[in-house]
Figure 1 (cartoon, rainbow, N blue to C red):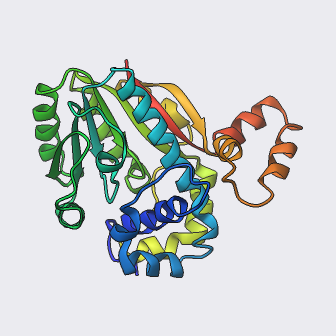
Figure 2: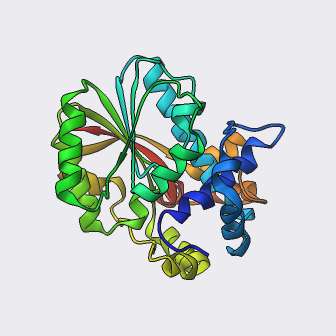
Length: 282
């Protein structure tokens, strides 16, 4: 059912809809169900433990929301560049500064679908949708230069993107982003090699069928980005945040209790099993 990498956006949109429809929702995305459509439901239905494993991506959404709004409310950014935005509707659903510039960037098919589906609904900021294949180095460099020339302090988002790229592609993207002086922060999610193995075992056949295999999980963690001009300033562990937000899988508390009995090194290893990371230009 996953026919290309853009279909993964429908998959994750179902999870945002599931969370938004809870009486105790930790975020609300009124557009997620409509954007996911029947195809999104079908994708989740065919994924192994498709609904049970919604929690990491729900937690990730909440973390990204929190960091974006902290930067916006603090007046630290005048621009948000949302790479491989998929069906993310933050420009519509978050209480953003109306003067904020927001750029959604993705492949034309999924981007056209989103903007057509939400046509007539106003965004809460100054919004632009730009169709670019981010694996095309020349085109992304031109795009970054254009946005950079119009911004003073930008936050770049890459939610759910890097795992589908090779290490070489991630390095190239990191270098190109750092080349723009106004790109101050970069918010990403990152998986550990062990998590990548688990994801491939559970969902590898599904994503490979759509030519969207899981690839990126650097053994050195966020240190991977340092040679390319980016350093970690904030790491939010998916497991820890799931416990705090009460969105973890069943019996997660047992694993957390066992973890406290491990060595400090092992505890940190498990803490960094998966997380969301705010990077800052060096």
